[in-house]
Each structure stands twice: as C-alpha cells, then as structure tokens.
Amino acid sequence: MLRLSNTLTSRFALALCACGGFALSAAAQEFRVETEVFVADEPEPASRTVTLFENGAVYEFIDEAHQIVVYRRGNEDRPGRFILLDTTAKRRTDVPVDRMDALMEKIQAWAAVQKDPMMKFSAEPDFKEQYDRELGQLTLSSKEWTYKAATVTAEDAAALIRYRDFTDAYAKLNALMHGEAPPGPRLALNAALEKHGIVPVEIRRILGNDEDTQVRAAHLFSWRLSRNDRSRIDEAQRFLANYEKVDNETYRTALR
Image (cartoon, rainbow, N blue to C red; front, side, top):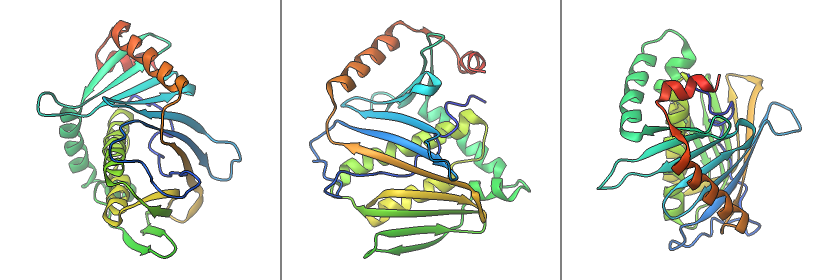
C-alpha cells in the first residue's frame, strides 16, 4: 500500500533543548520537532522531516517525498482524521481515524495468527522492560525486537500526552498505508515512556541481533514556531482548500 516515507515509522527519539527538560508550559499549544533518522552506520540521515504542532492541528512536512501529512484530533463534535497532501500531483485524500482504528484491529488479529515470528510479534509484542531512573535508560528487549532509549523526565504531562497521541496515531497510519506489520512495538514503547513520565533523547531500534537493522532517530524540539513555520502552515492550509480530493486508492496509485 501507500508508502508515505520509508522511515516514518522510525520516529523514535527526541533531542531536547539544552536545559535537558521537556519544559513546555501547559498553556502553550505550539511547538515544533525536527526529525533525522539514521540507518545502520550511515553518517547521513536517511530522512528529515519537520512536524509543527499548532492550536488546531499537527503538520508533518516530508520534503523528500513531496508530501504533507495533517492530523486533526477528534472531539465530541467530529471524529479525528489524517489528511494526506501530494504536493506534486496537487491531490489530497482523507483517512478518518475511527475507520483506521477499525481496520487496524483486523490487521492485528490477522497478524497474530501468522507463522512469521516478526509479524506475530508486531501484533502481540512481549518485551522485557528495564528502566534505570538514575541513568535515564529505558530498554525494551526481546529476541525479535529491541529498543534502547536514553531519556529525560517530562516536565509537562500535557505536552507529552499530545505528542504521544500524534505518534500513536501516525504509527497506525503508516502500518495501514504501507501494508506492513502492525505498530505494536512502537505503541508499547510509547506506553512505557508515558508510564515512567519520560521522553526519549535517543532511541535505537534493532531487529533480532542484527546490528545492520539498527535505526537511530533524533528529534530537535523547539518551544515556539518561527515565521517560516507559520508560512509553511499557511501554505498547507491553501493546499487543503485547493487540492483535488480523491479516494485513498487513487492517491496511493499516483505515488507509485
């Protein structure tokens, strides 16, 4: 299925501001995250993205794929949804979160009975968890999959919850649109981080014992949006208003 980016599900790390904390006030609704993802020992990042959190939505700019992903969380009046923008074909498609969640449940049920150990593990991950609060080191380990995260204490629970809501939903979207394994391991990591009230500074993911599968991601958090950020949001909003709306299959086919 549609691949938004070959590294979007590797959103694993936060490189926080120099003070070392997650010092975003509860009243603040706007912040940004720059993401770089490194594969194996490659010195250059395989992917760079910019994610902008503003009052009403989250905007993910995937420059190398010429795409923008917009996330609007649901409320009592309307369900949440993702809106995918193809800036080359000038098309958009909508993915309702409730429909995505229903399909994800079916995918997880299917994956749980497969013979492939990685597929089965992704549906029902069973990690051994170790957390050293003094060192800020969180490890989720298994023979199939391992996360090693260097972390700091989250100083603002509301910001952490909002970031987790987006990354949880995004992990499900990627798994659904890629036709890949369920995002159970990433969701388990997110749950462990929230349980301990921490955010990751760096996370390394290894499949099995193969170091060649290592993915390391680093995010740079900033506590305010720049003038350029706001210009990018304004541009994305114009795209939302003007792009041709197509169904998911038509959108996916155009990106092949």
